[in-house]
Amino acid sequence: FIVAIGNNKIRQEVFTSFKKNLLPATIVHPSAIIGSDVTLGEGTVVLANAVINASARIGNNTIVNSRVVIDHDCVVGNHIHLSIGTMVGSTSEIADGYLSAIGENINSFSKIG
Image (cartoon, rainbow, N blue to C red; front, top):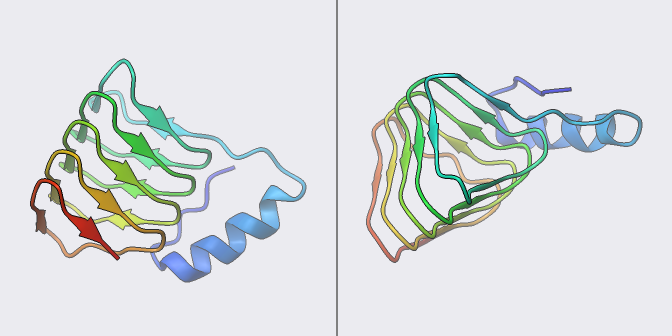
């Protein structure tokens, strides 16, 4: 299953409830570019033209929207929505439940949330 709800809190509640009886899927659009050693959590969706570079770790039930770039060695938590065009600089950490603005730039080595 995938939970396609934009509101992080509601998506988390539905994900947690469904996970009791169902297996979450992880879906990656064919045009997304994902490094070979990237970790994608359960129920995560990576949309068109997103790029996730080497050694990044993406948590569960996270939306990586179109044209998002996550640079190397980033840690993105659970139940996050990275909105269209968000750029996450290298070695950054984003805490659970974060919602980025469209086109948001997160500088390298940042800790958000």
